[in-house]
Length: 102
Image 1: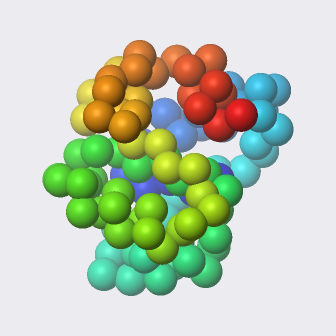
Image 2: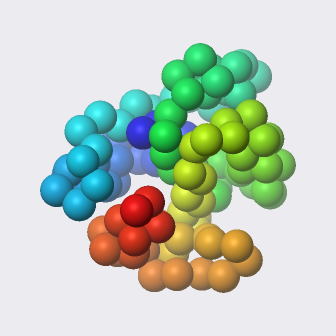
Image 3: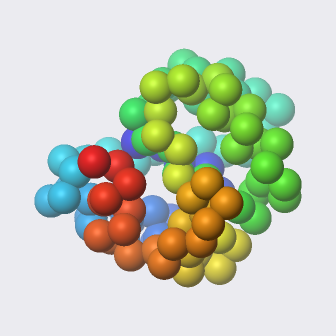
């Protein structure tokens, strides 16, 4: 699992919540940089969690989704209260996240 733009405390909460639900034990933060897509391709995560504030628009998420064809893409709202899922907002909880990943 990889994350982009997720604050460390939130990343730790996500990782701990998913350990028991989806067997995730590692969450790697990948810094936003011009080489972001290349780094994501090298790491090749099963799941990518992106903070929408990092995206600015949907271009980063679209580029990541195209580059990582096997990864499940999860985009969190800027305030991390919602998961942006196919144009809909779903409340961000550990259970909602786990449901998306199963």
